[in-house]
Image 1 (tube, rainbow, N blue to C red):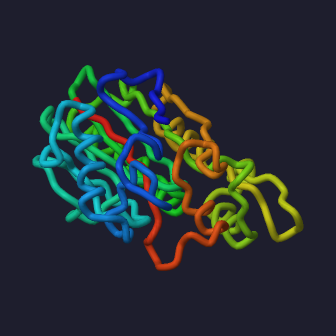
Image 2 (cartoon, helix red, strand yellow):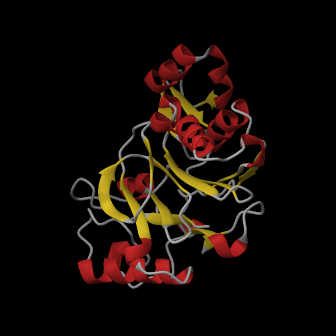
Length: 253
């Protein structure tokens, strides 16, 4: 399964799901997490499948060494998991930008009128720190007009599945008391459900990006067609840190 946003050219982007690759076992099948214990040849083949979808090679990809930062960088040449950041922007037609996720929100952005694209890894920490704003700011610095930017929020853990504790809610309320609107009551006074994709969308709208496609697809349910870190945790499939599958979201000019 994969998802295509209505506001981006079909042939220029894709939120890939868990299917269509060659990995086996708990990594079945389009795993892109090089930090996992998946077979390395299978991982390389999976990236070949992804890059080939756009008529490109792995050597054309700009892949980030992601964490939970607010750092956005400019891609002037391809790079393979060497640059530590959670957002990237380019004006180079040869480069394929990508973001890996497994519950966090992948965000693809484009101003095709001015030839500028971007991608962001927006987990709750990165979104709260400002990764969305920093990617858009860098896009504008490289020639984009914020009014022309189309943004797509891909499959991620949705509110019905995203149970959090009150300490996380407190972090958001301390940032802005209006953030309470993104939390609904959980099983007791110490638990809530968080609307990640709604929060990411609000950050985009607050800086003037109005053309937004929000997939609303929940990565957590087993039948979703997407990898989920939380689901794998609940199924006791993560035996070592970072040993879990991830999906990939890509955009190009």
